[in-house]
Image: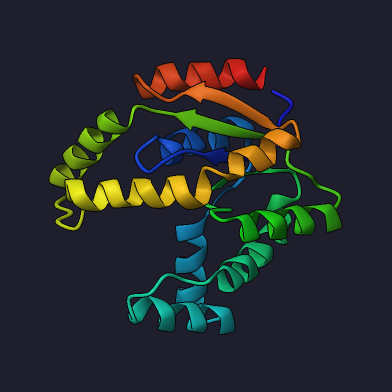
Length: 189
C-alpha cells in the first residue's frame, strides 16, 4: 500500500474511526482525529487549548480558526512526517483549504481521500444501537439525523474538492468492519 497520507470522509457512524485504527496499525502512521487533537490541546493547557475549552464549555462548536491551528500543530509533529490518517478534519471548505495549504508548505500532499458510503437508515440504526450500548442519551434518532444533515451540508461537499484533485476513492462502508477493510485495501491498491 503506497498511500501514507490518507483522509477518511463519511457521515457519522460510517466507521471512519474503526477503519482509521486498522489503517494506522497497518501503515504505522498516527491517527489524527479532531476530537483527539482538541482533547490533547485542552488537557495540555496550551493557549489554543484554553480558547477551545472556553468555546466547548459554552456549548458552542469550535471555530475553523481554532481547529486549523490545532491541526497544524499536530501535523507538524515528527510522528506525522512519514504519513497520517486524518479522521474528522477537515469538516468544512475553509478547513480543507487550510489543510491543502499547510500540506503544500510541507511538500506532503494527501495521497488519497477515502470516501465511505453508507445507507443513512442503516447508520441511524447503528448509532442508536451504539448509543444504547454506551449509555449515550444524547444520541437520539433526531440528533443523529441532524448530524447527518450537518455532514451533508458542510462536509460532503469536500468530496467534490478532493475529486477535482483526483484523490477520491469511494468505498462501500456497509457490512462488517473486516469486509469494509478489505474493500479499503483494494481501493488503496
